[in-house]
Structure formats: structure tokens, C-alpha cells
Length: 201
Image 1 (cartoon, rainbow, N blue to C red):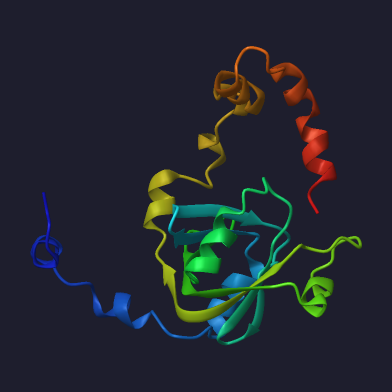
Image 2: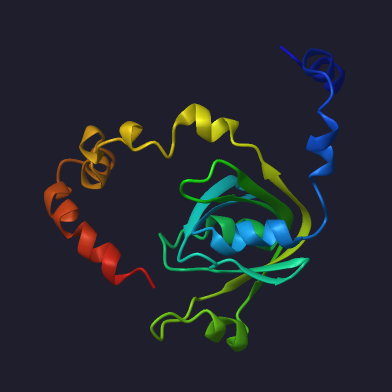
């Protein structure tokens, strides 16, 4: 088992200079382009209850570049567990991973979050008259793009490797195994598409 940084660096060596130089403390023009076209981001947080990694998605540009050091992310309806937001209240440190369909490179942002209910922020993210409950303001500490190797290896965007949903347990089946045989998995699955459609915002 490796237990020290020296052991790691002896095994892996040092990163290439380009891998270090691509990390900058602000959002430049190139990194802004990634954020403004990304329809999906993963939000990672930590707190006293543990770690959380939460998917967030919406129309491209839903994460707003306020300025070179600030992002704004609306909190759309979800499972209402509030894992990420609970963590940010206690420990504002967070990380974002932006992913763009069909693009190999991803974008990583590290920073600190602040949760606001300011009506101006909420109104600015309204969709069909529906406002988010909160908006997460992110003070950017570092930004850098990640090379395409992981997505190339995974063949994530290759339609020939897309998985049929039927190969996995349905959401209703998962709930039934956890909650017991009395859970009506069939009805849950039949109503799922409509429930998702009507509660997106």
C-alpha cells in the first residue's frame, strides 16, 4: 500500500509542464466557451456527513459565467435530500466537472460556494415562470481542462456502446427491493416519465 506522497511521486513521476500550466485561477475566454455550451455538470462537495457528488443538468449555459471569478448555478427540483447544499453550508469548498456531449475534453472548476435566495438571482433563472428555490454562487479558485483519454477509453459518446435501459433494473424495481414487496413498482415505472416531465422546473 502507498501511504506517502513521496511513494506516489516515485511511482508516477512528475506531471508534464503543460498539465500544470493549464490550471489558472480565473475563467478565460476558452474555458468560458466550455461552460457556456455544457448542458451537464457534476457538483462535488464535502461536509460532516460525508462526501457528495451530484449531477446537474439543463439547457446549455445553465451555469452562468457572472465574471472571470464567479459562476452561478440554479438549484432545480430534485430528490430534496439537499446533500450538496447541506455540505456547502458547513464547508463551502466544491468542485465542478463540466461534460459536453460528443466532446472528449471536460472542464474542471474548484472553488467555494454561497447559497442565495436573492429575488434578483432567482428571477434571472426563471423557466416558464418557475423559479429555483436557491442559486449557488461559486467563487472560482482554479480552472483547467481535462484531456479526452477517459472519455475515449470509455467510448462514452459512441452510439455502438450505448446501453439499453432494459438491461438494468428499473427505478420501480430498485425501490421495491429496498422498500419491500408491497411497493408498487409497476405503477411507479408507468408514471415515471410523466412525473419527470412535469417536475423538471
